Length: 412
Picture (tube, rainbow, N blue to C red):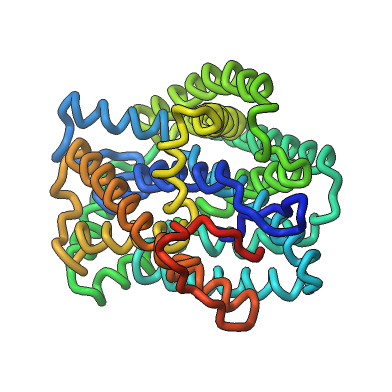
């Protein structure tokens, strides 16, 4: 998660891009809606659903999350990571500093934070993936926007094709998941997560190999593609002066919404009803190319909204959280760990999906208020301040006057 979101104003000063802040705040909700399901049940993601919660309402919530949220919002964060990289490059050029060592220090700090996050709070951490793939983004910084877009599309298509090939192989071989073995493992994981801190960490370490496989073979190609699309968008300043891009945003919604929702339905049906089958592998291939379209449609809808007079209040509500996404992201994991694991209440496997959904929405609303309060008094979020210190190899100033409301021009 990259914190800098500035462009050069005509007079040479750096100003914020409100659209980027709003998008980041919105993406935090989607990330929370997905991640909390993994905290709440050790069955989630195994191919089996928790046998204790099988009502129509439970199933409806699972379908809603799978269709609308899963595999969508980490793409939005990844796109914004690539976009913000171009802003960091411009900021380094304005300040006369060297981009490469600054960005390498930033990636190193992200990796260290991500490893700690994965081992202590949530093995599904995305920061380590960003840190590793950020090296490719750095190497591709001089790529022309059109070539970056072509590379991203090719990467998504090739990965989708690989899943189609795997689906054909699976269809020929037959088989599926071992329900007894998977169920036993889920029960073992549940008991481990309900134990003390040592038990929780040991359980997370047991999960890391499976999580790593998911990151490498599914998330990483999509993340890299989104990085490249963000790089291209940043080079074209596409999130600036949105009132001039209304026609483009409408086209994105018209294409991305129906196609993306259809792909999400296929993905959800395969994942929830036919896990471990060739159909699920086929659905993963479909999702690889349709999820980015739905993500783009979500972003376009929000951008159209916040660029109008009626959406400014929404933008003001989301922007403070969007300015401290690293802190908010890790705080989400901390709160969920305290609620669902042995660090705190140990409610894993004991709450139905609707209650989990209610907790997620409540936590997000509280986070918006907390971020608003913090950013009225500080230039950076707590972990954003630490990340900037690592990037600059110097301690940055953090306090600001409350009257500024966190919106004062800041150096990139």
